[in-house]
Image (cartoon, rainbow, N blue to C red):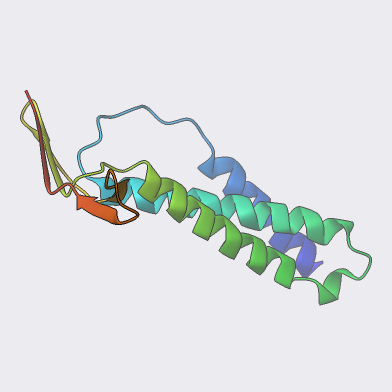
Length: 125
């Protein structure tokens, strides 16, 4: 009975967290990354719970929920970092965004060496 209540609480949490929210302009990248990580963890835990329901001996497989949450959190973190601004500071029409810079690689023409680039400041006007 306790396990069923726990599963129902997880399902209720997931259903409330997936409610639509209004779109706002992105000011700071960290809340977006945190939200994507949290949504990934909740989705992974939900999928782990679904795998738990399909197993024969449910009491021995609660780690499915934990592993699903972990994999979902890592996936959400990767998605959030991928979608953040590419430069450290981005100024777009008076709006300042601070983010994690992305390291870009480029091939040097006529050589097998690679060049590594990091954008520190991006201005758009």
